[in-house]
Image (cartoon, rainbow, N blue to C red; front, side, top):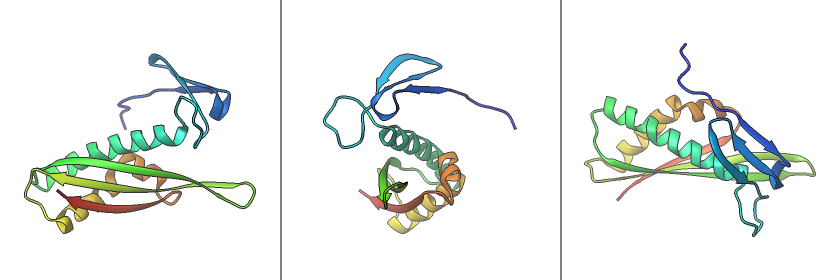
Length: 137
């Protein structure tokens, strides 16, 4: 194994605090989901990171399948609560293909393959229920 990248996030004040990264000079204002305050919540950052990672992994999968198309990956992350203290995440990955010769069935097959190789998908496997879908524009 060879490490490609490492970063460390530091948060003080939990969901209403401040977040920083070890390799970035910016400071991020954290807010609780659903509030109208200015800032971001952890679920938003998770969804963005997952979408970027998945779209990158899809690039490798479509190249190995000799397919060429533009893609947009949308990741939805939901924060759920069951009972008084059982919080958990669920989500969905939707890939939209354009400017290529691919059917929705072929695209969905590539999305399913990508879900087996994407590092984020591997990390959440068995922990977060992720629904997969695809469409062609």
